[in-house]
Amino acid sequence: MTDLLIRNALGLDGKRWTISVERDRITRIVEGSKGPGGADIEIDAEHLLVMPGLCNAHTHAPMSLLRGVGEDMDLGRWLNERIWPLEARMGDRHLKAGMALGCLEMVRTGTTLFNDMYFREGMLARTVADAGLRAVLGEGFMDLNDEGKREEAIERTLASCKVIERLRDPRINGAIAPHSVYTVSKEGLEWCADEARSRACSLHVHLSETASEVKDCIARWGRSPTALLADLGALGQRTVAAHCVHLSPEDIGLLSSTGTSVSHQPSSNMKLSVGGQLPYPSLKASGTRCCLGTDSAASNNSLDMFLAMRAASHLCRHGWGAASITTREVLDMATVNGYRALGLDGGEIRVGALADIILLDTGHHSMVPGNDLVSNAVHSASGDAVRYSIINGKVVMDDGKVMNEAEVKREAAMMALDLLGGDLDG
Image 1: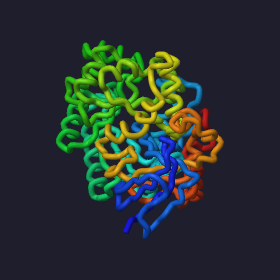
Image 2: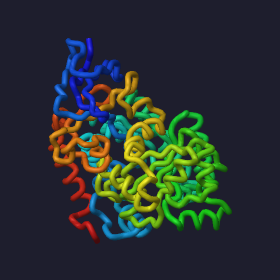
Image 3: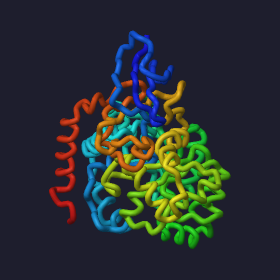
Image 4: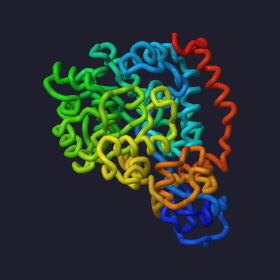
């Protein structure tokens, strides 16, 4: 018996499709409304558009609690004056509330997989599991060139990985997540590279986000951040490098030759004025896989990947010309490219793929008229057009309804007030 049947959905190709799901996989796709009977759950999708679930390839989901904090600052001031001092005060309850809120927003806006870097990720894995999402969770590793801090970061990382492994949830994997070349020592970066290799897991790192990061790295080590990571063995097919907006041609060659994936966060980069732009045409020409993320809801104010797609498309065309990126390429960045970067067989409506599927309301104002459905998804839709989120074959949002939504929002508001004391700017 089929576990889930999505009947007569409109595809991005303009045709009608009926999709069968068994357990966690898409098992059958037939054109039209005919399909097997006897499904445990059947969705009448006549007024719905079916598309792959979105992958948020770089975020810090618990920072949803800090939405609206540190406005009108560049990255350096934002981190040092507002974010890091507040993060130092965050306890377990704050972290859980922020993660639950982030997961709620992602489920509601069509994200089915996210790549997270934050603190106490082992503890937070249960919150993610309860929300029904698929995730790769990396304990943020920072040692600030201090040997004692490095040992503590190693202990936290290993403990987080162990808790995630014990959870035995097929949707949730651990990762190694060195923050950056400016917050992690060479010894720390080398340990992270070795540990990710021995575990055969993802390595998640910020890379070349600002010009000062590149300048300081060259002054200290005689090479760019990309070259330094390459020397230390931290680049490779399991590495996702976030930002990459200050790259030289030599850097792009290293990313391409090592098979490293790049995650682009256009809205966060623009808002925090990082002074650079992802060189997408050069990365594409080199064969480097590019995916897409939101960064945190503190630096972007939104985890809506539809808005990230629009920003990525428009920013690229603004910088490199109207032909520099196609609408389909942007959609691939937000779906299949992210899944492949994280080593997962999903992000596509295809027999055998993971059953991570979203359904959008074709009557939503952003989807009318349906002259070009791919264009609508990338350039006009927002997450509020999503009606169903199906993750690992399970309906996590059912016709706009998400379990425990009111409770999650209430707890997040209370914990934000507790953390901030009602003061967003002081």
